[in-house]
Image (tube, rainbow, N blue to C red):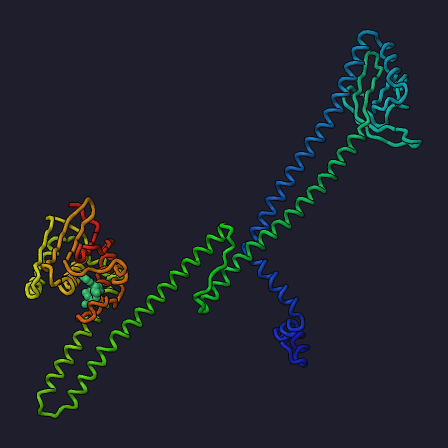
Length: 495
Ligand SMILES: Nc1ncnc2c1ncn2[C@@H]1O[C@H](COP(=O)(O)OP(=O)(O)OP(=O)(O)O)[C@@H](O)[C@H]1O
Ligand SMILES: [Mg+2]
């Protein structure tokens, strides 16, 4: 056990307890600390730091450039003035010799001209002859070329030491000519520029820092909103949505897309719930009937003929139930796309003819004329079993609902091809389906009012739609004037 542990023990507080106790005492501090830790871990902060670094680098770059060009400009100006002065003096010397040079230097040195120029002509030993500097500057080399030196300048009764830059020329006979210029103004100017640039740099960086953190906080807040909504949805509140700001920016787009996704999920969940409800509801009646029939069989006297009758009826009921389950399973199978790998090239005309042959006896029995009109060689890729089931369902519907007392009962099956689309149409001369119901009849268990008396579950068209979608096809209902035309379309296989 460590020393600290031994110390803590008598108080009965572990490290974690202590932290918790502290947190209880300082709830605001804890929140602040948590917020800061969360901010440190965020992508937004990393972005802000990066933004700040790029911003700082560019601000410094620009300021450095400004400083460098202005300092360079001042320097060049000093040099240009010195050059002009020296050229002038050299011309005088060439024309009028040493005495002429002395005269002109004396003229230029007289009085304070306020231009910061220094002149000095000395003997070969350095004794001043004429000029506005008291003596040869200490430390200045005796060699033609540029020199830097300091001079004592009287300013408002005081003597100040100013830096100067100049040119030394050793003229024939070793006389010396020094021309210089006070560069204290340039130095002050450079210093001013430096301070100004430093301050403006600091202000720009401060603004960048504030801008960066405001930007990252803004970003963080919007991500937080999405996160919080997602958490609430996960917790079970599926109707919650991410608030939109109406700015149409990327975050609004993200929020709109997420909301759209949630809408779709909610719709699917509702649809699934409805299907489950419908399945339960539609199977309850036949199951209750089955139970009643079996009960009846049980109650009838042992040697009566009724039990056999009741049991047969119960078996029929069970068969109908099985048929419903099979239809539901076929729809699920088609919708899941699991049978896609059973697809094979097949002749749509042949498939239609085979289905029609199967229904021929029923058609005849019910007084229907059944025609098949097909263009030869219309090929598609598909699941033979599911497609036959879909066509059979449509024929079943046409024969079940397509009869009319005052019209000749006629059902036509037509297979054609237009470019790369193969179509199969089944038309009858019955009452048809009103335009308003042409969408809903595809939903599971939907049966329209006039057909409720006929046997059926309302699953036939649901399977047709699922099979069409499985084959990347479409199904549409149209008026046959009078009657119904079901129009199925699939991608055709190139012959
Ligand atoms: N050819 C048609 N003419 C008129 N109404 C039709 C026709 N085909 C379908 N309908 C209407 O659409 C409803 C749904 O048809 P669907 O094939 O899905 O179910 P069903 O025929 O009632 O039952 P199931 O096909 O499961 O035995 C039918 O109940 C009927 O009201
Ligand atoms: Mg049907």
